Length: 449
Image 1 (cartoon, rainbow, N blue to C red):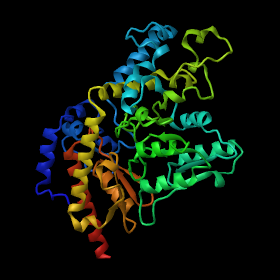
Image 2: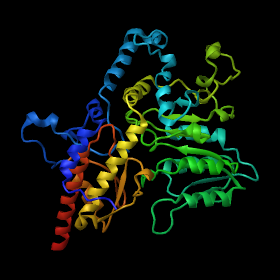
Image 3: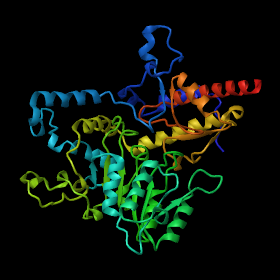
Image 4: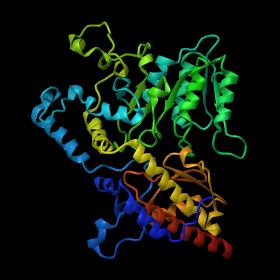
């Protein structure tokens, strides 16, 4: 049982003072009151506007903009304006566009725990999942099923179902979904392993999310991967909510393939460039090919015989967007100053502090249920609160008016995601105190009726 916090504000301030990552907050733009809805409280003195920051707890949906990103983008626009096509090879900042993806691949590999040759920065999440499934999903008469989560992110389900249809198979007989036990919101690893074992003789692929978008559950990726591969099943992971959030060791875990976006915890901006991982033992897979995956030494020979670049780079199709790539670079330069171990450690402390404060006041805690695993090791940088009696929308609107940015999933859940690079313990404290006041007001209003 956790100890109660007798002086939460002072505890928050002390934790911030001791936080070795606290200085990274200054490297990000924190939204101000311009983002608030009509009716929001605003600073009385106009001079205070810039210092009146939102409490932004929505990094699981869109990460904040690094302050360095704008300069990087302006650099590339200037190169384009001044040099035109020559920017591909002659670049004043030593970032020739012909190799722009190489500016981010090394750090991206560090973040996902892969060899640099196993990682490529390219495309977008769902497109990359399609390309990878085209390479890795090879159903046979005996083995054709795909194991997925029942509550997978819809885009994943659409992609997987369409791949099944593409092969002329019936999704109802091909997709095997895993659901939580009745009364639970998270999946038990034992149940996942049991289903894998039960379906092993007919299953071709397992494709799950590293961190579940709705509940924030961090799956036991290493255990699940090893168990499935020992049974001859190809293993892929959607890491949209895991990359930059939790520690990953894709190479050592023997993951066959993975895909992710970069605009959540990696802060690359809306619609930012995605990434893929292909284990070095799987790089010879047949794939849908494009010229950017062709051997660099003969790429411009313009011959029609495809020769793949070894590793994940051979799965690339078109030259990556320079602007999207340097937007990612702006954030990865910050990641390179710390480690995922340090970020993960702070993340678990942040969510633990939040959870302790949330459940400390029994009068308001009765209005919601935390559906994220209570063990910090089993979750990402997120707590999902399921509100009772249809009050979620009222709570969400009130938080918005108070300048607190969170994320909602209808009908009843608010997801709260403190990102360790830029969120503070004091912000977590302020969020919980504001939520308590909101719930007290709602309860008083309900009592009057």
